[in-house]
Length: 171
Image 1 (cartoon, rainbow, N blue to C red):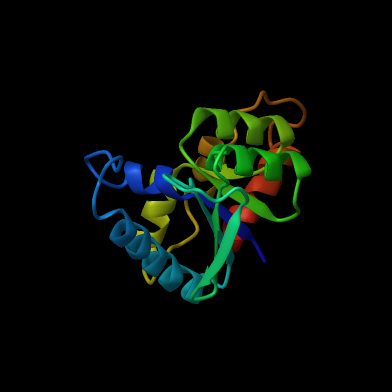
Image 2: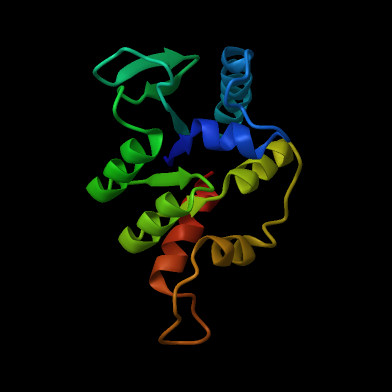
């Protein structure tokens, strides 16, 4: 089973036109995202963790909570969600797929061979749930995710790309 780790505020920022900083409806935006992810989780059966920055928090440690079977993590006061996700990437947790459009996170995932999706790609996949797909475009999706140099048999996808494709197929 895939474990999808999502940079929460990055996902919200990418899916709307304005910035969320200073938005009085921040809690509503978080709950809306979590509700959408709950429906996706229910259909796909994936484990989902969403990491949020702890804006204006006085908490010294990370906070965890559950929301309809989704693990929600708030970073500590002197830590960002990016820091949390990058530390998990470096630990190379098995079956993890990162969702972020943040360049630092994407570069770290590439370096450690961890599959990732952009926030917009996951939003598209969530919109497609329920629709029958023929499986076409898997290689294009994987190519979007992994932009490494190709070596070896030209008729066979690179090992990392095959692993990424397999992880995405599980989503």
